[in-house]
Image 1: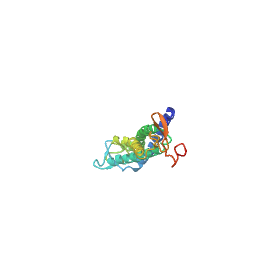
Image 2 (image 1 turned 135 degrees about the vertical axis):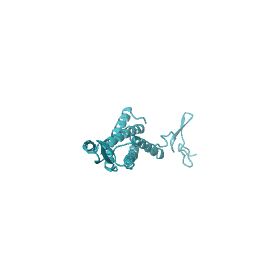
Image 3 (image 1 turned 90 degrees about the vertical axis):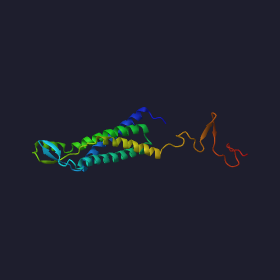
Image 4 (image 1 turned 60 degrees about the horizontal axis):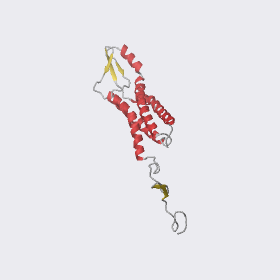
Length: 200
């Protein structure tokens, strides 16, 4: 059944907004769970105290993990709601909302403690060490949320498609089948009777 265009656009917008609003909480989680990275102040500039350390990689990895989990959860939730709303609108909402949520998560997490970090870097003497804030170096992981959400939705649709035989254009048992423009009931007649119920 075709849904009104207005309802499809409304579903798209609501889905986008709901998913996007999950971005800031994801950013807060990221900021609270990232590995600590220490900087040393040299002439007012913060430099990595351990340039060969795994801290920055761990920060990117933690963000990527949160994006993957969020994408899986959003894709599964959207599929569960797909019986009542348009599939295309939900997919578009997952893509747009996931992209917005990823950017919001990055910016929100990066802002936590940023003012204090900048102040310490500005006023700290040479050799002073400060703890850095969450920052994303591998910007490519921003696409994980929308891509994973859409992929999970599509995979669930493929594995557990909601289409009934009639929706696929296949006649179910006891349904009318059109042959040569006329409809014939192909359901089995009771034993000893024809399809009209008369005895043979």
